[in-house]
Amino acid sequence: MVNKKMKKRAVSPVIATVLLIALVTAAAAIVFLVVIPMLNPSPQAIVIGAVGVTYDDISGNFTVIVTIQAQSADLTFNGTVTAAPTVAYLNPTTSQGYAIANGQTGQITIVGSFTSGETYNLNIYFTAGESTIFAITEIVPTAT
Image (cartoon, rainbow, N blue to C red; front, side):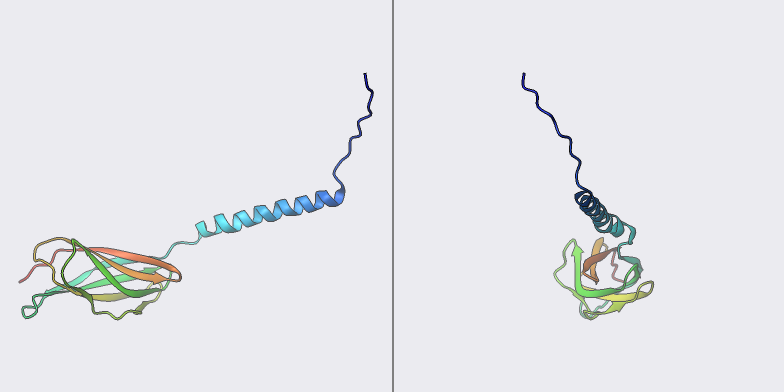
C-alpha cells in the first residue's frame, strides 16, 4: 500500500475575492436585464371610441374618426392603418408623424371604401420609442 500524504489546500484569498466579485456582478446584471424591464409599463394606445363614421354620397367612401389615448409613453402615428376584412380603398388622412403625448388623447381620421352594415376591425399603428404598437377598434359603417 502506497502511503501518500494528501495536502488540502484552500483557494487563495485573492482568487476567492475575484470569484465573489464576479458572482455579484453576474447577479446584478441578471436583475438589471430581466427584472427591471418587467417593472416598466409597456406603452399602449387605448381606443376611446370611433367618434364619427360619416358617409360621403359623392365619393361613396366612409370617413372614420378614432380617438386614441396614449398611455405610458408618447405615441407617434406611423401612417399605417389596416382593416379586416380588407377594403379596396383605405387612406388615413391624419399625417404620418402625428404625435399624442403620454396621457393625452388625439384623433386619427381614416377614409375607406367600407361596405355599409359590415363589421370591420381597424388596426392603427403607432411608434413609442423603439416599439411599434397598435390600437384596434371595431366599426360598423352605415350609409344614411
